[in-house]
Amino acid sequence: MKRAILLLPLALFLGVAAFLYRGLFLDPAELPSALIGKPFPPFSLPAVEEPGRTLTVEDLKGKPSLVNVWATWCVSCKVEHPVLNELARRGVNIVGVNYKDDNASALKWLKEFHNPYQLNIRDEQGSLGLDLGVYGAPETFLVDRHGIIRHKFVGVIDERVWREQLAARYQELLDE
Amino acid sequence: MNALIRAALLGLVLSATAHAAIDTYEFKSDAERERYRSLIEELRCPKCQNQNIADSDAPIAMDLRREIYRMLGEGQSDEQIVDYLVARYGDFVRYKPPLDGRTLLLWYGPAGLLAVGFGVLAVILVRRRRRATGPASTSLSPAERERLATLLDKKDP
Image 1: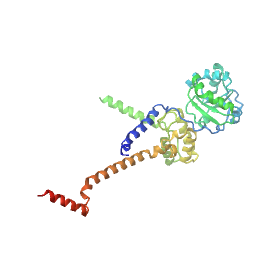
Image 2: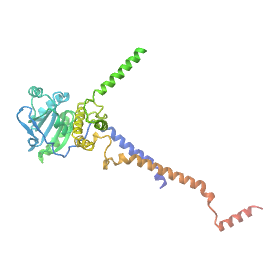
Image 3: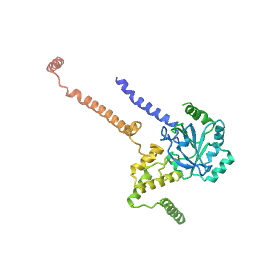
Image 4: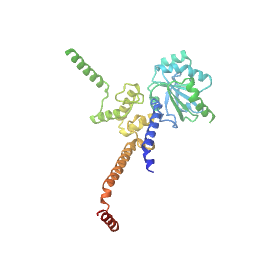
């Protein structure tokens, strides 16, 4: 019994060490979204390509989508764009949120680099972005057919990210 | 040397004005200004990991300052404003996390460890004292005393 108590400090130390060791591999830039499992926030905003058309959260329902927050001022969005084009070509349903951008530049960008978006929400004031808890583009939300946010990815989607983190989740939403 | 001091002073003055230039909002009262100040100082900027909203130049921090100003103007309470931000950005925006199952260890862990430490210390001290004073204070039973006396008597001659 007395021997066992002598091992207690060692056990405590190992516990703390394991805790800190795990901490070494956590990415502090990766914030879990507070919105997972919650409905996509309601909005009423114009479409980027058709200024007369008003988009609402109802437009997102019916089939699963990748809601991608982008902007022409966002450097990494340029890196991500060809990947989105490729995903759209493979039939992935992508919806854009043009975040705090100038619409003319957005239109020019879509014309020059192709348009992977089925819909493109024009969030010039960043109000939808705020409701989505966006803190830097690009950010991508996986939204199911009922308009519930199921997953969030912050940063550039490349082939590897798609393959390892998003493809299976998207497929799951399709199969539901 | 003199020039150096003068340059340093100029730098100080400039940085002070640069800091003041951030606050361009007008408040109805000093109390409201004070609430605004304490709110932006106690909320963390979601983009910059470890800066509060007041100190950050990130666009998102600017947006959040504007949003907090707007909500203060609408007469919302501090609690409502914090809840509004937590609903969007999660508990990350609070430097002081709420007390729940996940944060129990964070809140009470240090106090718990301290209590365990004091407990161990107390046990050690009590044991040591008992050992030091123990044998002397133990009184012998009459039978033992008799035996002791005979033992001593035997040795004597």
